[in-house]
Length: 415
Image 1: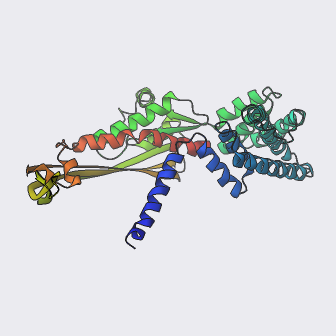
Image 2: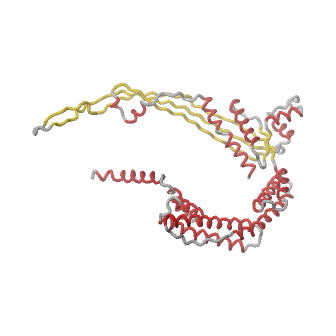
Image 3: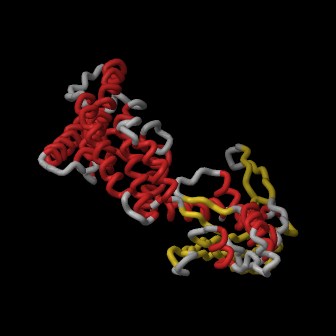
């Protein structure tokens, strides 16, 4: 009965060891993913994942069987979609037809590439039908391009920036199907220029060092990378505008963002505030007595048959441990909003949150090291280290924010 009590633990440990080792088997993750995709009815990714796994283990019958089941299902799904689309009369079907044909083409190419691998390395002849959709794709692409081109022309008549943006996106999609389709390139450039929003980044509120760093980093990143529908007024540009128009002499500063925004020609204004919390360094010390029975010496003796033996003499050893803990932490929240310069309407808001914690443990002891538990044997090898200062912790969090900040702003203008 005693051995049975350990059976569940042994099973868990064995399973953990198996799964841990499985992670290092080449292609295992791809095969596991393929099975999950197949069970969910996602046959395209199932095919691509199992083919990838077969490159590492081409003689695995289960993987081959999965491919032979998933591939026909994927083909069948796409062929059903083709029949549905071909029965439609509107031109919106053509981009979808191209994408469906291209998905079929990718599946066929993947199968064609794995066939020689299975034949050479597993002596298995994969009998899966592969069709060539090149002609169908090339025939559908001009029609897909024209669908987006005509939609772009219709949208371009709109007076709003959003309409111009949608028009530019459609002209760009047309060129994605046929690179030099009619005059789509010129129309895209014109619509894009009409669609661009100019964003003025006002002075942030909060700790002076943090807000200066975050604002400068945010503006610097935006200014040095191309934005399709967004133009940032940099600090240098803003100062030039203020200087040229004599705004400083008139008592108008960057803080008068609505006035500055209108005079600078900005469409929107970004404002932000930064709040932080900080938990001072806390150091805790506890003292514990450790005691353990160990072998203190060995003694030799001779038994009645004259055979010599050695026996362990047990004894208790003691130690006193001083256990130290040091911790600190902080948070940073950046809340921001974008306002329309002309209407003062709030059009977008969001926030970015960061948290950073420091925790360190170490120990010292007096006495016999053999008395220490495994945990304290590890901790006595650790040394005390300095906790980060408040400014270092805040700057660490601040450095991780600009990239996400820029991405959020970009996403708003690219939607």
